[in-house]
Length: 210
Image 1 (cartoon, rainbow, N blue to C red):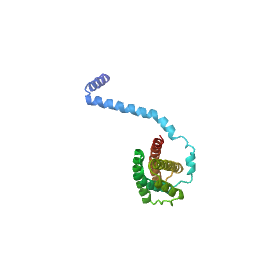
Image 2: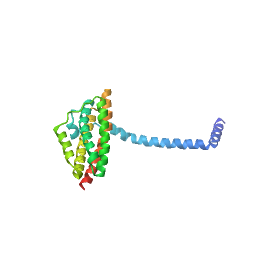
Image 3: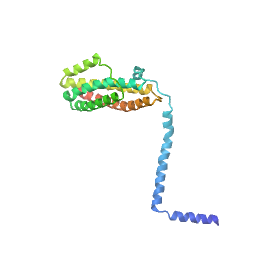
Image 4: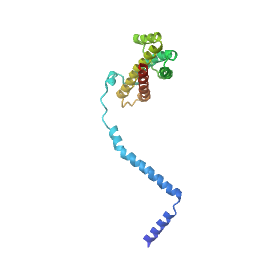
């Protein structure tokens, strides 16, 4: 008797389900299906996160000594100041549309990077003879020659910065010091921008050679 009563009660409750309850069950099923997909993908993700660290690349080996945030900041600040100086020239002298547009964006980025790094105590290294020669070459160049010189320099500069940031992140992996963690966070943000600018400069460089 108790079993029959429970069966009738269950049927009564099912018959009294509202549309809202039905939708709730549907939503729950959708959520469970999504969780199932995540669970299915989890082993692959776990396998990726537990793989041994890859061997350092040739670019990383070039910056094997860059292990601290201060070393990274100093390494960035020199190229950033040179980029600032050359981009000041480019916003006035670049004649190709994309080169001129890039110069404006790069100038804003260089101003910000210089300001942030100096605010946290970084000191720019002295400008080298090569740096001075680069600026003088751009001052002397005009028209299409200037466009090629400026974009060619920016491509090399951002490849250097990309490799520097990538190497620092590799060398400082596992750092527990709060200042080093801050340095790693900044490097993670910067390396994404550096990679993007390398791609943009390559595209513009190809346009200038066409």
